[in-house]
Length: 268
Ligand SMILES: [Zn+2]
Ligand SMILES: [Zn+2]
Image 1 (cartoon, rainbow, N blue to C red):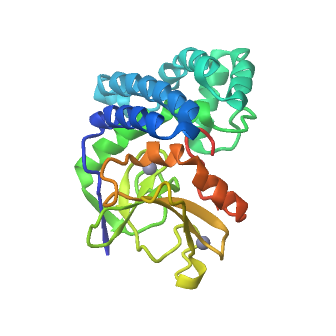
Image 2 (cartoon, rainbow, N blue to C red; image 1 turned 30 degrees about the horizontal axis):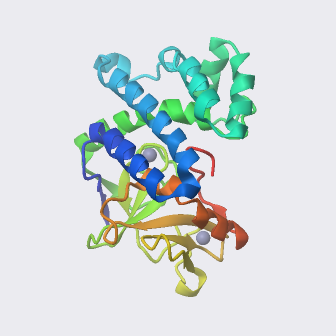
């Protein structure tokens, strides 16, 4: 079966949507106020990178310009020092002492997934910088293709794991959204996106009465979980923002000894 692209809007508007939603949830979810404040700052920062990449000539855009991207390290470090959680603040202090070529190496290592991202415990820094670049590249790719080969459990563009599962009432029912480039693709709702377990009794779901549109999709075969956002129940939901803000559900999953399939931007 061919897999289809489900991204509903142009990515240029993804940033406004995320900013609006983070502000909304900051009011509604006191438990996530600080992390959402931080997310708003990071989203504005990423929007600037996206605009810069979009205005770069095509030939230059098609190669990874690590020097350009590394130039975003100083403002990102300043942002983390002002709004970031404690563990990222500590990492920002360490990264301040590095050279520009170290920052370029960190970006390239994250891009190549070579696992030497400068002893970062959370790959927040290269991911925050590379995400808008990858989102733009994926947007061009989808515009050309629209559909691709077999359904897979990893992103058909960048091969990263999904960060969240979405229910939008499409015929297939379930969509996975890439944790890096935000590409969305359909995947059977009964199958674990990590180990492909399909037995229903091995796929428990957990929720919280206070956040009825988001559930934990667990897998008792591989002990992995990811969050499932039912957009039919809450059309205002924004995948990345609702995923990061709904921290009580991560506590439920961790208490039950599940590990997240792919950490979100802030490392949870
Ligand atoms: Zn992707
Ligand atoms: Zn599994």
